[in-house]
Image 1 (tube, rainbow, N blue to C red):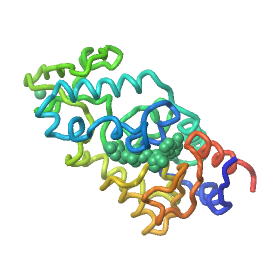
Image 2: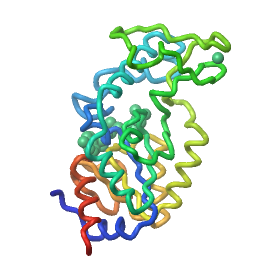
Image 3: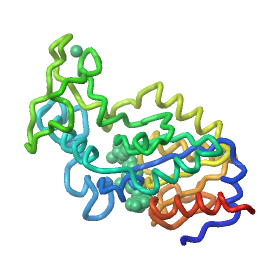
Length: 254
Ligand code: APR
Ligand code: ZN
């Protein structure tokens, strides 16, 4: 069992509202690669400038569409892990609100209450011009083909290419998601940061804002992140070990 400070346990036990701020490490034990872990990180294997920017999209829509369909298929072929399930258990007798940087749907599939997808979703493709959500079967990841370049579908309304529903570097975050995330952070008596390197803004400013407001921040990560100076308690463990341990400790009568 990883060490968890009594103060961290008590903070969660006493909280009516717990806000979780998750990153790619939350899904690592499900088999979804993170971005910056050595060797396995997506940005160790792929160039974000070629795949995750508006310029990449306008330069080669088929390369970008194909890559995101591949990522969506990876998620479709995997399951939530013990960390996601622990958050659902924690929500049995308190409100657990999830603000995630992740574009997978593993929190939802585990029954977590997701209030904000700060960086969008792999499962919400939309028209690149008129923004109409696209739900055609040719965008269904189950039908994703194992090809590097796949022509994106065409919007039935305005005939523009359909784009991935994710936020690319340099793009603004969805306004409604940002507002809900701010509200979830403001309402929390404790914030649990899970599996993020904490270096991408504005998302990373949310745990900093919580700490600045005197809200205890607990981090679950095998290694310290860039948020370490705002973290009151770190559980040095993977999400699939640290979160179940925290939930067990909170459930034990004091
Ligand atoms: N459990 C918990 N944390 C883990 C695990 C695990 N099993 N495995 C790795 N980690 C931690 C790593 O130590 C690291 O701190 O997860 C973090 C992953 O960091 P990143 O790969 O940078 O992912 P993230 O912080 O979510 O990236 C933020 O960057 O590329 C953009 O939009 C993308 O949302 C993403 C954003
Ligand atoms: Zn359109």
